Image (cartoon, rainbow, N blue to C red; front, side):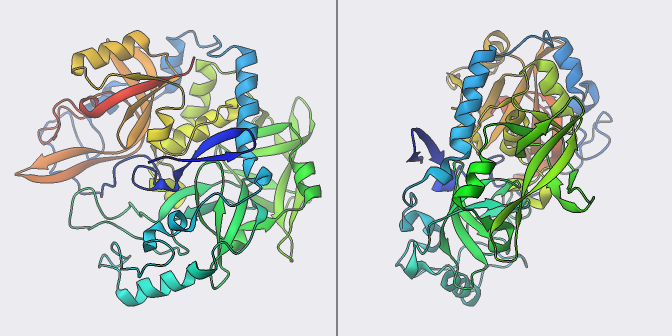
Length: 463
């Protein structure tokens, strides 16, 4: 399901339409590891043959694909960057609440219906009626919408389906359910994300917000109220993108303000060849937004948009190589769609938050009616290395080009579906890797002999 909203002249999909939207990468699969493989070529869990045979270095693949050639003309990239800004700041241009109560409280059965417990709690037992009722009451359904405030995140935070940090898992006794797939977790949000707050929980600890990606609950203390003067200063049209993770942002006295990661976008005050002075939002004692000037090295941040080339994408992507998988951005990690979204932000390219929407973000090529060999040929023939997304339901990857006669891809991967003596399981990879389109086909317990390519439905080409 897609829920289309209009703020200003732009339309976009709000990912609170559930089902495919949540976090957006793997199907909700729990870490049920398959029985150990017997092949000597697979020494340990998470080390399928592709990970030994293929270089886990994106520069190798960029060098094979005219690394410095522009993947988009400069004028088109500039247009895409302007579109990004329109969507990014869209919540501050809103004139009305866009999410109806039925949608905002869908997990609770809507605004007025009695709500039954759904899912399993952190003790891996079903949510109790008592604890679920407390959660529903705190959602404060009767008064929705209760506010209309233009706010901003002041630190990395979470966007949740319900006003709680507690999880909601699928049945942990079943493959594809349970930890770490907290279905309450929509996404992580970076510092400096414009939001529209339209409702508050009964205890005031959570706000229900809208943005151009999705809607959900954020912790109240992680955001601040903006006024017109703040928004005018912040929305200055010149922005820097953080280029890698774990960049400490410190004020002029050397005091830590917050952490910047790849995907963070901040307004620029001054720029030189070696440094950028950027504005970082903070929350004052009254909960209002102010800015702190922070100086960052041009090794850590750059004026956006960076020229889009294979070499540039490889350089940023290598910073995420091997990072641990995090459903919905949980534990400060990334899932497949969040990794790709963050990767393309420095280039001024807007990607939606979930894999199904990202698959339609560019020029979609459908090959669902093709067999395995035809799919691989379509990818090699029509895919543009470093500018093509390969999509299967619940997962998305970045096409890197041809290597040793095979199409290869970069993706943050949870695991490979397995079956042993009729029981489903997962052979866990759990990190960002380079593989072919058929990783793990050498596993004796693999469920789909064609690997991920079996379920691959199409690709989205940037052109």
